[in-house]
Amino acid sequence: MTTHREPLSSVLETIGRTPLVRVHDSSASVPVYAKLESFNPGASIKDRIGKYMLERMLEQGDLAPGGTVIEPTAGNTGIGIAVAAGQLDLQAVFVVPERFSIEKQQLMRALGADVINTPTEDGMGYAIERAHELAAELDNAAVPQQFSNPLNAEAHYETTAPEVDEALDGEVGAVVAGCGTAGTLMGMARYFRERDPDTHVVAVEPEGSAYREFLGEDVEHASYKTEGIGTHDIQTNELFDPDLVDDVFAIADRDVHEEMARLAAEEGQLVASSAAANSLAAKRVAEAVASGEIDAPHDAVVTVFADSSERYLSKGVYRSFEEWTG
Image (cartoon, rainbow, N blue to C red; front, side):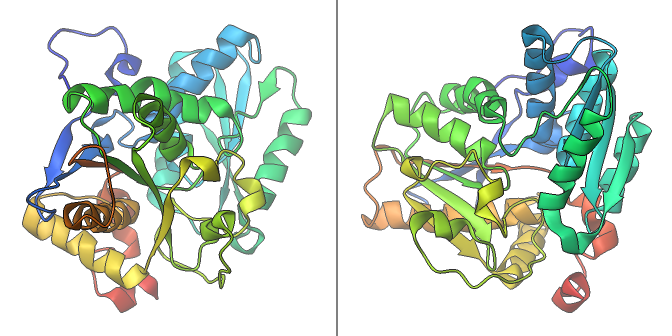
């Protein structure tokens, strides 16, 4: 974990090297540490994949300078890609289901991108389909497709995980992360499992999401308010590898809402709903390691706080639970 101490030539050089901070409410004997990804210039963990995927796509010839990148996204990936595209001589177009954060969509447009909304009820599956249709209509256009592109997980294998490894001197017992595309968890899980096959790995999703189906569980699909993680169709989540995961924890919206408030009031952490879900799951894992229920190779649990609550204030994240979910 380092800070930037010298002048930099581009905003892209500020991506990564984010702080790793202890969650104070975690077990005394098995601490939980969270990567604070809002310290990235686009204020989320998705800056990492925006930069990494576009640079690799340009290197591989999948895009040429001056081309167009089109991505189906719930918002943060769009911001991360837009930050990178603007510095790499690329145009950006995003297909976003209507229900997602207005703040995120405004930021994507401010960064020079075009935003196309699709109906909420058609889900991310239709947004993916529409993005590919648009790319087929243009010359020198490509869809990074964060849900299936191995570069997504590779970005975290190459950046996020080594930063954690360095900060904790390799003593990571468990990795816990929410899964939307699953890129963050898959990249980190592969990195730490290569170093110690006994590293415990837990995926996090909202109640009502379907990730537990990967492990053979029956899931009652339902709507949820926790944003940025979860899925209703595991066929669209091609990066998720069940062989790298020991368990999937489903976290209720009400618990997430309470933890968002607690993290702000008690720990000064202005983080959004996915971070609160990760915090709850990581603390649960830490307690299980401390009690001996989980046999982890080291007494430290790592998670990520993907973005800031400021992007969701219009949705009432700090108002009553009924106002947030209403």
